Image (cartoon, rainbow, N blue to C red; front, top):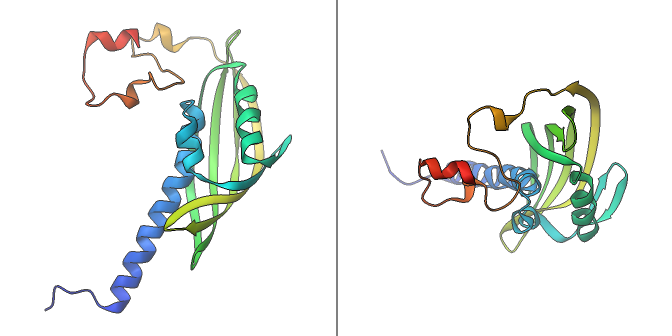
Length: 180
């Protein structure tokens, strides 16, 4: 038995590596917005990307400004992405993923929830996958009473910027985390 990979195994490994890079790209598009981390958000897209995001259709720089304004009324939000269908053809990939976003109003206790799909076309440029076209499809939405707040829970508070504990290296457990 040889330790060397045959051509089929090498091709399968390349496909898995590409798929993982593509999934991470889609995840970074969400994490970048949720953490207010523009470099992470930008890393998911190629510079000339265009997006149809409901009331915004246009280039990436305009999308950044649109989302900054759209997220301003909320004190907390999270995007969850799942059910990745990835179709890779050379240096191009088409991806359908499901999203769920929850948003808490900055004033009051109302929660908004929305579910839908991201339809993405990605391209590999100089070895890096990035979104070049995205269409966001909203399938449903709801508004709920969100009484009770995370501040009352005793947990470390979330931040929508780089002061969030997810950026701490190395991660440490301290009472000081409560002040983040």
